[in-house]
Image (cartoon, rainbow, N blue to C red; front, top):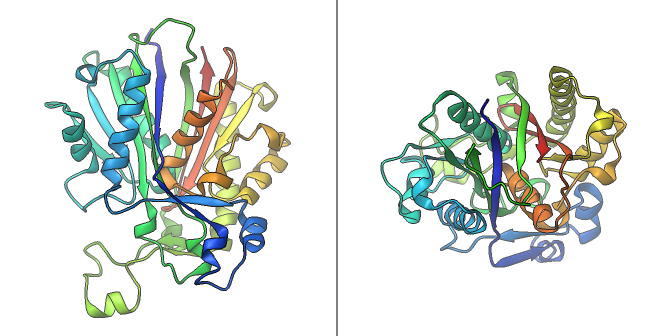
Amino acid sequence: MNTIVLSSFGVYKPNKVMTNNDFTKFLNTSDEWIKSRTGIEQRYIANEKETTSFMAYKSAINALNKSQIKKENIDCIIVATMTPDVPYPSTACYVQHKIGISNIPCFDIKSACSGFIYAVTVGYSMLYSNNSYKNILVIGSERLSKTIDWKDRNTCILFGDGAGAAILSKNTYSQNNSIHFKILNYDLGADGLYTDILYQPAGGTNIEASINSIKERQHFLKMNGQEVFKKAVKVAIKSINKVLNNSNIKIEKIKYIISHQANIRIMEAIASYLKFPIKHFLSNLKEMGNTSAASIPIVINDFYDKNVFKKGDLIVLVAFGAGLTWGSMILECI
């Protein structure tokens, strides 16, 4: 029986910090307005050199340095991002080159904020079904500051930049006292009926770049906040219950829930419905803001470094994002 675990984590946070008060210089808003509605106090903003692939690379090196796995033993690289350096080739190929690995598969997952769970699931399936794969590098990296409309106070206040990485390993992880996360079960889903509640109109082949597309600000993220809130809460609860039922695990047995870091009100709504203590929702939202596919691996890394996780803990990951996509996963600390 293959034992597949998340065996090491890494993170990269840009150098620049942008606080809520910084928005008051060019928007009609306030620190209290932002904080009360979102739970966010600051976020990191990448500079010109901190591209999506650069941040992904840095987080990957951080994860590798914390592990006993050499870069030559990585068999595949999967990057979850909705803000790639370029439409093609994949961000993963840039990361591969930066790390200095060759002749392995590299590809991106574009499932927006659900991307990391999607990517881990794909990597898990590859490890489970193919004996030639032993270690897969999974990364969530986003440079959202380049795709948000800085004139739209309802959206630009939400997002930040950063990257988080994890190494998925099969039967090769260190058996020392380090905590590893065994994947017990997962659930993925999507509903294309709601593609219009969170999307970027231009930038693909549907609307080509033109003076009009730029003037109409179609190259920026568009979001119906109320609809995203309602749909996110609904699908998150549904997915968590499904993965718990499929695993025959009661919610009372779960130690922590790590949700996509979108909005504190979404997490509170999920916690209330599940009757799960909000204090056991691990969060760095007030520091990071919404970093889309990078949010969950960054949270895991931050709390892993604080030695929060103990052997035997059961953890639920849950994410939701543009598409509408969603996913959840149960991990056991071993």
